[in-house]
Image (cartoon, rainbow over all chains, first blue to last red):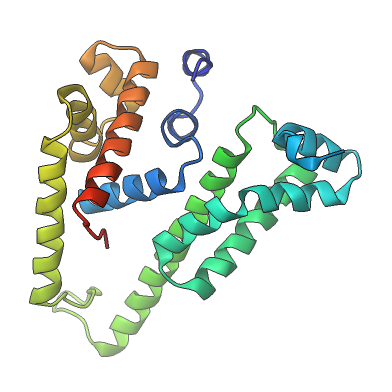
Length: 41
Length: 194
């Protein structure tokens, strides 16, 4: 995630930071996040 | 050349240089993860297949139009497209339900209502919520904090970073580990998220 701070300083969208920094291609993590977002909507 | 050693970027460049088979190889490399995610969300193989195709049709179109800039995160980008397609599907389902509801009736204000969930659905939903809240309480303090700020308080990662006095990099890292830990606990306790 070394480029995350650099991306943040360029005001890259939250969505892009989230997918690149948190999910990193892990479909299960994306599912859990989607589930939690919906559960606590 | 052994395609297994070609990075996503190399395959993309190869495709853009005219090697159409490079795109097939790139899609094949990531198809399982993308398909798994879509299936987990929509729980219907036929719908998942449609959304999977729409996802890669969109991805290829963006690439063909020169609007994709590779930063080494091809799979992340494709998962975003897939996720948005899944949301479009759920929205369409919701609208379709509203149309059906109008045939069945409407409340005194003339507004459409969704079908009321039955008592059993609500109990199951409440139980799942309780179980998940308990798991969140088991997370290390820093991870728990990020999770609560994101899901309970709907804060952005920048807001979370500012409020906890850490870099956004750290906030994102804590979120990632929180999800990894939640996944582990969900599997250990055989919880079914549905």
